[in-house]
Length: 158
Image (cartoon, rainbow, N blue to C red; front, side, top):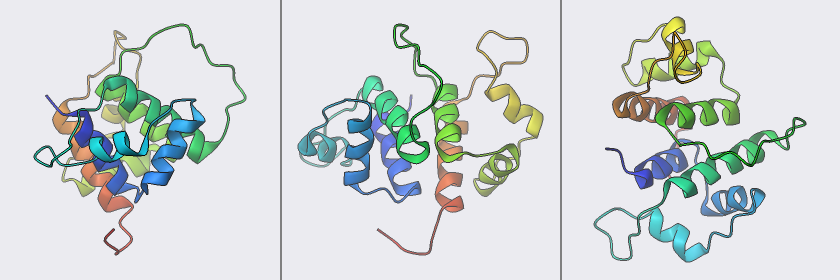
């Protein structure tokens, strides 16, 4: 089982996000994330002060990231229904936030040495329970995050 903290950290690194940008993303969805809490959930598991992030915190961050990168949506949101954060949904939120098209997704997966067709990618974004839906494994999500890091690599270390 993948740790939520690992996902957050990999997104931070791949997109070269400063803690300020992450805080801004939380603020955009009305979530009060203290600097101390943010620093602690971004620490390595073995580091002093490390804290586990929650699925809610990851989901809110991804929602905030969409707003940070794309701005407010003109379509009304349905806030009353609780949606379970799955690997497929994480992938979808990143795709929306970064405005990634299928050819870019194929490249990102290829950068992580994962060969995937456009049809297979499409099945990752289908409605769960649908005929052609395919669940996104932890390995596939981690591969995507590693490929994302390569895709956005600018030659500088943070």
